[in-house]
Amino acid sequence: MTAPHHTPDLFALSEINGPVVRPGERAYADEVTGFNLASLHTPDVAIGATGPDDIVTAMRWAAATHTPVAVQATGHGANFPIEHGLLINTSRMTDVHVDPTTRTATIAAGAKWSHVMAAAAPHGLAGLCGTSTDAGVIGYTLGGGLPVLGRAYGYAADLVRSFQVVTPDGHLRESDPRHEPELFWALRGGKGNVGIVTSLVTELLPLPRLYGGGIHCHAEHTEALLNAWTEWTRTVPDAMCSMFSVLRLPPIPQIPEPLRGGFWARVAIAWPGDTAEGEAMIAPLRAAAPVAVDMVEEMDHAAVDRIHMEPQDPLPARECCMLLRDLPSDAIDTFLEQVGPAAGADFPLLVASLRHMGGALSRPSAVEDAVCARDARYFMESVGIMPAPPVAEAVEQATRSLYTAMTPYGTGRTMVNIHGTPGDEQDRARAWTPEVYARLRHDKATYDPDNLLRYGHAVTPA
Image (tube, rainbow, N blue to C red; front, top):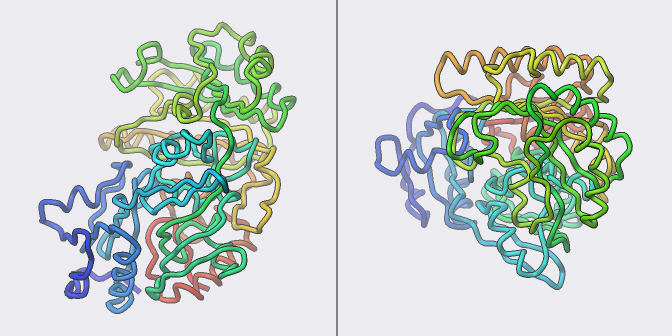
């Protein structure tokens, strides 16, 4: 089924409380633009949902008119331009309710992790957020959710207790391990293929503070720091979380002055235990090479953005990832050849990283889910900024070269949230094992047989 190239009758959408806009109207650009400016959306109609009722109305209209549907809150993971169809913007739905007694949070569809942290911090609690609290909770969690403290506590999807979700037939459903258990399974790691989540309930952590930040060395020490970090990761306890990165940072005000415009090797660490113990544990990293900028310190959990210092302003980005079986010496050499100092200071990727996996990330969830990254020992990801065609072409070429070179060390799979621009069905299926992908296709056929939710990293119905 192909997307319509005209806007069907919008009379039924008049019941929606939020705005309903079409191309050419003043509010259209604000309604469809997300964080990743590399994906410019041009739907036939966009709605600004204010609550579950708006989403129910929109889905029923879409089902009746056979209009494909996409959903967006923050747009951090927008790697596919939405053309035609209906875009549901959930960014107005930001309510977060924290229950300190049960240590849970009920989080609405458009809430960011920053909203959750602000609501949880007064109770000494925190959520399992990723490397940026500006990202939306729902999209992140539907893709499994790889947290900063993942080795210590697992995936964000592991802590979800229930979902409220509108399925493509326009029904609002409650899903948990006892009610709609197959829907609950598919929503935890299967991305948004079986419905639009209006809210979720997740466990929070009694973790008001943590020890973390980045150790930065100048580019000439990249190899020494990477080798030391790789050996160090083979000895640390499960709760020690870290990532090695090669950074080529532009001279822009959004980057802190010591790092602005520099070419760096960095190890970012996050440790939820005793600060003195963490200090002793990272001593080998500090001794591996001359440290130019040391930003590791004890901090409030709500300040977790200081660890990875990701951009906070919208930009056009090309991201990609690969799950790795291990990091033998030849894999390290290959990585350095591709992105290290030998590639030059003007190499077009902003960041290329290796994250230490394992620990709680390797253990199965208490309730089965669709996350398929538990067998990887490391995880490679990259981001390139693409402001204009010549730079965009260089970013694309560098990305392809890196992942082609590292393929022999991969598991053959990716993570759906950071997969990047989805290709054909074979490419999209790499986010899951064949068995899980087949099950997701079956669930897609059950809940979305007309394939209304076909945008982005979509699974085709069986």
